Every structure is written in structure tokens, then in C-alpha cells.
Image 1 (cartoon, rainbow, N blue to C red):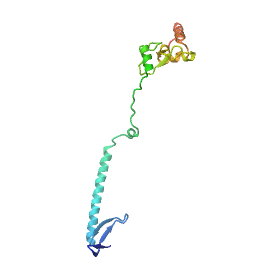
Image 2 (image 1 turned 90 degrees about the vertical axis):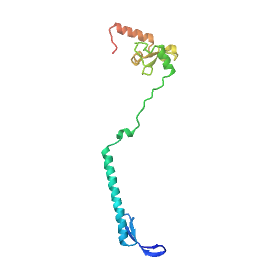
Image 3 (image 1 turned 45 degrees about the vertical axis):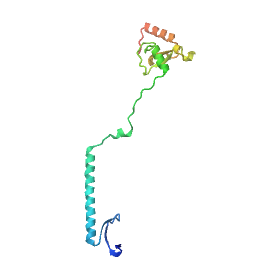
Image 4 (image 1 turned 60 degrees about the vertical axis):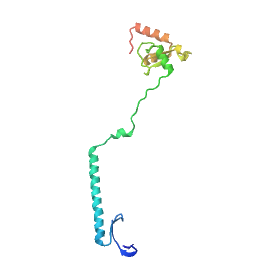
Length: 163
């Protein structure tokens, strides 16, 4: 390929990679151009060997993380704040079910129970609220506390059991 070198016309020889058209060697004569191209090819082959060795080493190490661990971040459970009303009702009943006496955790799954149900006109005042375990509250349904306790006493007197 003719080029201008130091202000004079000269012929430069280039070695071109045929698939990409990249110049991989250049020189004032064929031997220089071929020597430069060989140097580039040797360096490229050495780099390819190093990359292949690194890939084999990485594959041999295994995965740092299981794919499922990367798919979603770990779930951190935060304690739900307990409302003032629930704390007051829990304290009023000394942390026990009003009906069966079962111990209830403050942040557990117990019900705030209406002694006089709202369905019968009961209010959401602390004087009408009690702590109850879920089985007792669900069994009570829409009866008053006195009706529920009386029915339970009759059932126990007849020899019934709780489940």
C-alpha cells in the first residue's frame, strides 16, 4: 500500500486479517510486515491461553452464591408494633385469656374480645374489652360473655370436652 513517509512517497507493506479487515502488521518491506504480524498473533494466542486458563479456574471454583439466593433478597421479619389498645387489654387481663386462662403473648395472635358484642350494641371501650384466645372468641360468636360462660359450664357439667 503506497503511503507518504517523511514527506516522500514510499511503499508500506501491510498484513491484514481477512475476516475483520484489521491491520495486524506493517513494515517497509514484506519481511518486516510479516514479523510484526507474527508478533501480534503470538501475543493474541498467549492472551487467549491465559483467558482459557482463568475460565477453567473459575469454573472449577463453583458458584459463590446459589442462583436462588441471588433471585430475591432475604426476607427480614420485623416485629409488628402493638397498638396501645391491645397493650391495655392485654394488661387488663394479666396476659391471659378471659375465658380459659391460657397465657397470651402480647405480640401473639389473640383477639380483643367484646364482653357485650358490637352486634348487640357493645361499645369499643376498655370496660367492654377483654383478651381472648382465638378458639374461645370464635366459640363465643355473638353471645354475651355471661351467655358464653353459662353455656360452657352446662357443656362441662354434661361431660363434654373442648375438642
